[in-house]
Length: 172
Image 1 (cartoon, rainbow, N blue to C red):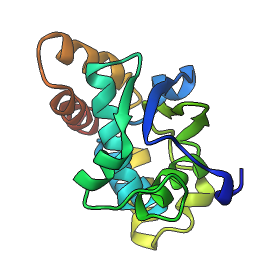
Image 2 (tube, rainbow, N blue to C red):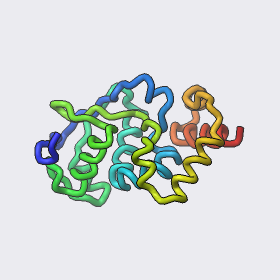
Image 3 (tube, rainbow, N blue to C red):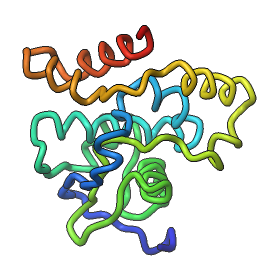
């Protein structure tokens, strides 16, 4: 898709992008993994957009409609339907890096980020690459989604459940 043809309606329907593998083994957009390793790849605005969309899925898991102009304004950005505005560029980065894809009336958006690809990781500073190697070496391969689900079912807010799951997995 060319950058000049990427447009999203001002009132966009956001639907979950169902990917069983990434949904099972990926990382919540609000996780420290995304902040530490994806942020330098997609940029802060795209990261915040994905976090806001993840919050929307917390309350409306099957999808929702969002006013992108309002969302951009609330983030301190301007919005236009193309990729010429900062918000449009960030949305386009989400598409370019496989975190979202355009639909006729909006976007299909991943609910979880895949592990960062080696080609992207290699572009990050050496200390971030080393931190990722440490993270990979020290992370126990448990199903964090089960722990998150249990915490959420017990009434723990989703963001807190995600953070708690990461702390437990790192400590184990």
